[in-house]
Amino acid sequence: MSPSQLILGEVLANRCSQVLYRCLEDVGSTKGALYLRPPGERTFEVVSFYGWPRSTHPPVAIPEDHPLVVRTQRERRGFVVNDVAEAPELSAFGQGGEWPRFLVTPVYVAGDWVGLLIQRDRIKGGTFDLDRDEGPTLGICGDLVAALKEFRLYGLRPQVEPVFPLPEDASGTNAALGPNRMVLPTASVVINQVAPADAAHPWHLPEVVLPSTGPSEEERLHGFPGGHETYATMPWEADRTLSAWVAPAPVNPDRKRGMVPPELRAFFWETAGLLCQILMASAVALWTDDPEEIRPILAYSTLPLSPELQQQILAHATFHLPSVQEQDLRLITRVGMTDSPELKGAFNTYLPLLLNETLQGHDLLMVFRQEDQSFSLAEIEVIEHMGRILGLHLQEARLHERYHHAFLSVSHRILRSSEGRLPSLRPHSLATARLARDLALKLELTTEEVEAVSIAAILHDVGLLMLDPAMLGKQNLDAEELKKVRNHPELAAVFLKDLRFPFDVVRMIRHHHERWDGRGYPDQLRENGIPIGSRIIGLIEAYEVMTSGKGYRAPQGFRNVLEELQSEAGAQFDPRVVGAFQELMARRGDRA
Image (cartoon, rainbow, N blue to C red; front, side, top):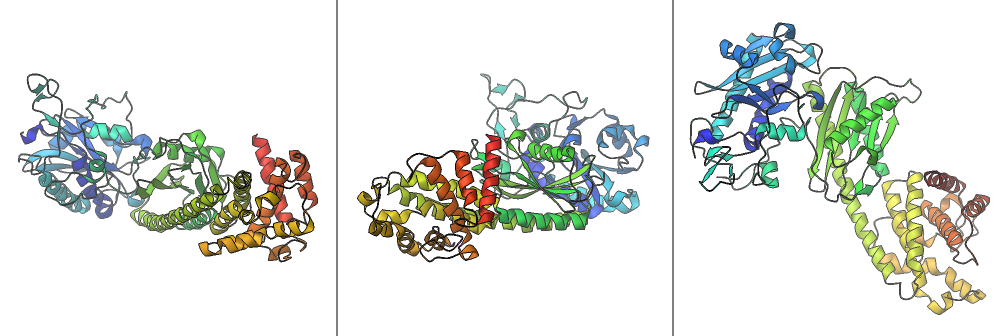
């Protein structure tokens, strides 16, 4: 196989992307695009780019007879265009900016012109200067040439052959590509997958449909092995903003709507508020991925956002998350200055940042501003620094959730053991747990308290397993039997004490029959002396018992039960908990 039979693919794109980002660091270019001409081809194809919004990405390919190529060939060195009106051949690269400025540099390998480096828009709107900027740019081009030599694609036999054969016909050749042609997906195919080009664009080349013998998922993420013991991480995009990044399909495509834990919300509000102050950003949004749930998008803004701006945040998020439909998402907003007038218009600049990328999820931070001004290098460093802090918090939160699910599994296992003796215990406990968790979230308890309430509600009646089932089946109990039944919270506490829950589960279970007025059992606690989880479980259990008919001759109606709970506010139940429960059920009734 001769080296001229190679077509550029993702491996080389990965390597070049690492070098391309230096345009921002060394020259101050807020946008950059690298085009390379595959050996034996007549078209320059984009290999990597950064800084372009998703709707205005640079052209996928430039034919050799295009005026920009002709001018570069004539100049034979880099040139500056600070007024695009003087260079109409660059108009397609100037979308999304009011005053685009360019630095165009050819890339040579052993005297052969193989590439085109296009830089655009210096930090803070400055102009390019060839005397000042050509030196750093030539250094970057030198590193690009070193990368090309590393893969030995031009004029040398490749040391690493990251290629896959296409099926051959009976003559041993491929009709479309010639004898023994070996290919990788072209850069245009890759770009069109993550940022589709306009089909009517005059520079858009027909796509070649390749067979499924291309790179594996591990190779797409990490490159190709060959002379190395392991894969080397090579992000496809030139930076971690990933302006064209698209999330892969979720682990569980049948995810249901979930929620964002209260403490994570609080942490994000503080982080986003700080970012808005430092960067003068208009809004900051966060998507946290979960294999089982479609989590809401959190959006913080200093001023209230108009419906159009909120819709724009959702549109940007769904571009990066194509497996999630917009109707499945909801926006949870927090405003710094609630009494201020509504922010209208559109976001002209945004920077998406990938926080955590694992097989279990992909967290995405998006920073928006209304000004049509790219983020400076210093601003990007601040966003990346805050993103790392937020990413670490998300990792800790996920670890916490895994522990929580482990304790939930133990709790469910205990309930299953009761089905033979007390068949009604498991459905009653699960129904109580579902509503108790929702009410705890409504009251905005901490994550730890929500988890404790969830587990305690599942196990709140487990002490009944230590009583005589025949006695529990009676309709009328004498005083001695009633006293034994009232001991079930204490029996549960003794039964569960050795499980060493990391939350206040046992205490919540022990006191879930206390009353707000101090007339409950077992310890006659009153008001705020009763754990908040016990107050929640006591209310939800009463609601579940009355609506299901357990302990009563017939189930009571929904409205009658709510009225009775309201009448007991301040006596049996915490008035604040009753009020929150009324709001929760009213909202559910509206949705129904």
